[in-house]
Amino acid sequence: MIKGLSITPPLLGRIAIGKVVEKNGRRLPEKDDAFTITTQVQQQGEWMLHPLHLEIQQQQGTQKLRSIPVTLLFNDPELNLRADYSAFDRETGRPLCVGNGETAKRLTKEGYQSVPCPGPQLCPFGQEARCKPYGRLNVQVEGQEDPLGSFLFRTTGYNSIRTLTARLRYWNALSQGFAKYLPLSLKLRAKSTTQSHRAPIYYVDLTLREGVDKDEALGQAQQEGKLHQAEDQALEVAARLGLANGPFEETEEEAEAVAEEFFPEGGMDRVA
Image (cartoon, rainbow, N blue to C red; front, side):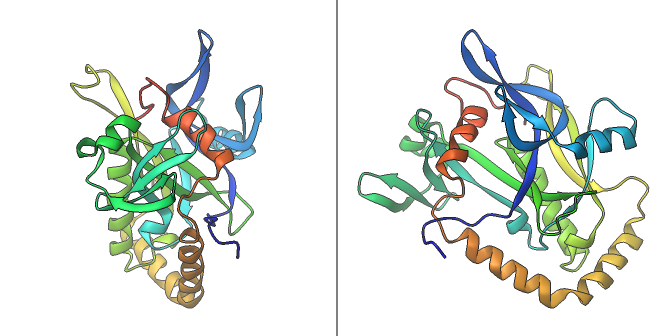
């Protein structure tokens, strides 16, 4: 295995709640009130819709996709959702510093160094580099054919990161460690705050699908999970080793798009 290269879950596409648009000669993120499932291909600066987006839209009979039927790739919540404090170079798109609130890996002239991480508000470097929370959630969308592929949802929103972290931990606890066998839905929710001037801001939640009985779903997940426990544990060991193989999860080619979408100069976050 090539050292220094983080091995992330294989991707089939992206899940987004907005897009990057051009305004006055600048490309800036624009909020949306619905999910978009895209491929990994761009045409004329826009991500192409994935066929599953239209399929789910037709099944739900709606123009705005506010719920996506999903399952988890792993049982371990921290493998499904990786969240940290991140700072990016807005000119090159390269990750500069990634921390967890205690320690961080920072790119310096001497290479990668381990430094204390007090969080963005208490870190002079973080304030200058506009460091903020950054989460990556991998899920499998109902209808996909690849058993090991996934779709990636990225967010820098406190509410999405906090809600998804809680839900993943709770569902894993209730299922006795077999959350990947639960029929779940990504749901878009809205809230208003004083910071949003009472305008709605959107964040992502993870719930059981509508019409599913909780006790029945948990029982089936436990039964299914026990049958595949050994292979699931082996898969998670491989995933942890792959993610730990590099200092940063994003490659340089991915980081440029991430910085444009989530870390724009003078821009605002798209979702809460």
